[in-house]
Image (cartoon, rainbow, N blue to C red; front, side, top):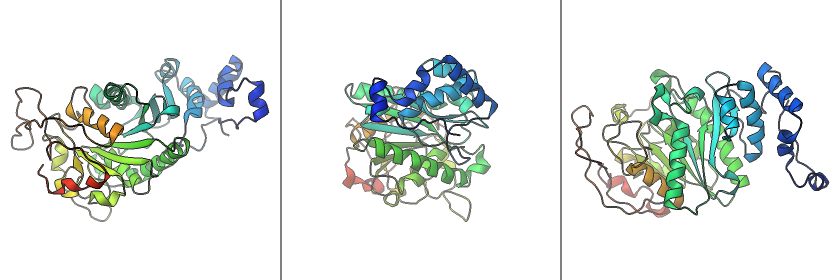
Length: 364
């Protein structure tokens, strides 16, 4: 049974003051809402088309439906809904999955989709994996949205915190692409919905760690609205060269002390993800980084967050003076910097579509 109501007729819209039918669900009686929440909680009614592979793709009409599901799930999710947070999809079963929207998706002409990596669960959306705040997908989405607004206060932007798949639980499971393939299929459905509903918008995919593999696999047959793919400490993308991901511009950030650099770059039957997008041989355009390890790419005030915001807004990184990289001790451990330090794999970049892969010969 689906919770999504049918589209209203023109006559019905006139009678209801042009309010969408889905809004009327929430405007109805409290008895109806409580009853629906009880059915959801009992498992007798489920959101539409949910599958083990991923959550159903949705647009803003899904907001009231997810409110009901979050009410039924109880705290802390009911509190998120009552606090005005908006979700395209929500499922608290198992490790949980959700797609949160930061900004006004209905009017956005620049959309960023953040995809997390190994071990990410619904319970970590706010607190961060292992209780580390900088790893929290919802926080990263808010920080990116704030950076976009700072860079251009008049831009119409939205950021999706996309936990729409079930990431691998550990390193062994992450050695295969099985979860990423399922995630890419679900992400592809969401991208097609965004393209249909916001056909003039530009979409940027941002994948962290194993999430880079998800966005890489999804990018190959993504709609043309997807103009940029960004990987942050990416383990792989499903291909060994940036130009094989399709027409989108490809960007990569890889911190000098990110442990991902020690992951073997191999691809065997059923295991391994090939060349890392942060390796210069891959041909992605490098983004500036600080020595913040594997989880600090989107920290406020850092060079990578500002650069990702410029990519989302303009498809290019803003000109800035290159800053020397922090020295890295043997074994990938960061030597203590004297102050804020950034690394530019190819110096300062401003780039358009023709520049894809131009950084292949630049040192990192």
